[in-house]
Image 1 (cartoon, each protein chain N blue to C red):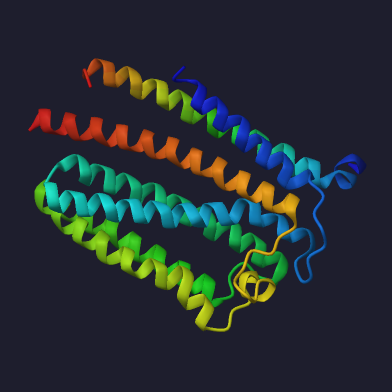
Image 2: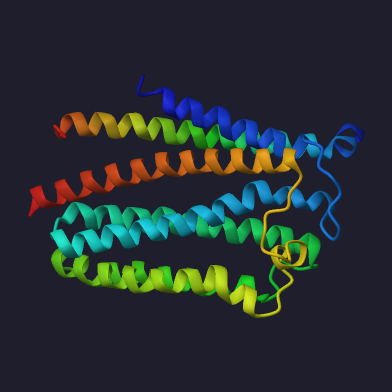
Length: 43
Length: 220
């Protein structure tokens, strides 16, 4: 617990980076799915 | 090659986040460490204005050329702009909790962004209320143009003519950018990174809406 109290800023940074990684993976997979659908629809 | 752009965006945003929390910043009166919000809050607010401007330009193009793809682009730009406007409101509200004591204080800046959200919320209501695609495109294009006329007033004029506690008129009384050089560098880097992220999200949204539009036309 002491670690989290003394390094609060880094804990917040770690959480922000985890959220960003999750968001990026979601957007990237969506990009690939859209590309597949565009090929199917011959766009 | 096509996958490089998202990877660059990933690295840039990760660097912005890391530097936002770890970079040493000079003491700013009345703000202190809370000034770090500028690297996340200002880019989202700038991108919402940029998105609404794009929506207005696409709407004008639709009215001139009557090409439904411009309507698809205008709707996509408004949607992404609305998302960034919500992000600006949330980040500003979090900052307000720690600076002013509560999440919402009806400060002129908060009131103006709330009205802006209502105006663009009405744009989506208008679109969902009309069934005929041609009529929907025409009416929402006109609405988007009129809605954008209010944006400079609510974002730039109103918070400056009424007394506000928003940091911009307090720390920047002469209306010029006076920022520590390392902060300014990160601020510009953050603006560029978030703009690239915006372009990527807008591109995805336009492609989804195009697919939806084409498949809807196939069915009917």
